Amino acid sequence: MLGVPQVITISGRGLSKTDLDVINQSRIREFGSETLINPQPDNEDWKRLHFLVKSKGKLLSYGRLIEVEVTFMGRSFKILGIGSIASIIKRKGYGKLLVLAIKEHIKKTKKTGLGFCNKDTTEFYRQCGLGIMADGKKRFEPGSTRFPEGDAVYIPGDDQLIEKILQQPGEVAHLSRPQW
Ligand SMILES: CC(C)(COP(=O)(O)OP(=O)(O)OC[C@H]1O[C@@H](n2cnc3c(N)ncnc32)[C@H](O)[C@@H]1OP(=O)(O)O)[C@@H](O)C(=O)NCCC(=O)NCCS
Image (cartoon, rainbow, N blue to C red):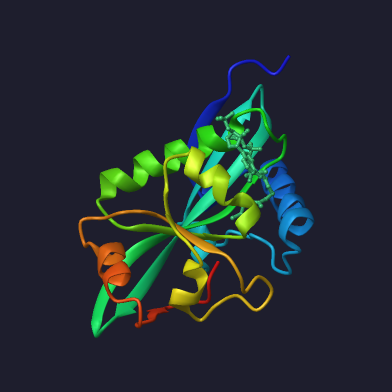
């Protein structure tokens, strides 16, 4: 029995080696990731917020937030990218628990939250109450070379960035880093 799962919010510097190993193995398995999460005082992983669902010390689901700047029609927006969402044990509600905690956190910041997904995971994000921008990957550059097709998922922020993008379907938003 795994017991009651809990969500832990922690900066990269606080991640244990055991959890990091599970996360990095999962990222290779699920996404074919070629880079490891390796928090060091001089890199961005050190301060980034990581969300873990754990029970009895076992990591069940994982995700992180990435600070991103978006430029749209000459204006700049500081948003939170939702990335690396993966459950080690699937279809037990751990992914939803994780994303609901991330959603609550983002809402408190009043920033826009933005993620990207393939069509086969869109329904999962809908179940978690995120907004769906169908084929939204096309609205943000640079895109992902490995996963070019799919939707954007979002949590609207006070900056109304998503509303602005939806109102101007001919315009593309520019990201400070490629889709994550
Ligand atoms: C997508 C993923 C994170 C979902 O995590 P999970 O822990 O299995 O999801 P949950 O059990 O919390 O499911 C929550 C709800 O979404 C639904 N759901 C989960 N995965 C789904 C899928 N692939 N398609 C449709 N619905 C899905 C569940 O039925 C559930 O609905 P319910 O609340 O009505 O029962 C998991 O499948 C995973 O790790 N996939 C591989 C990595 C990945 O693709 N991550 C997404 C990157 S954008």
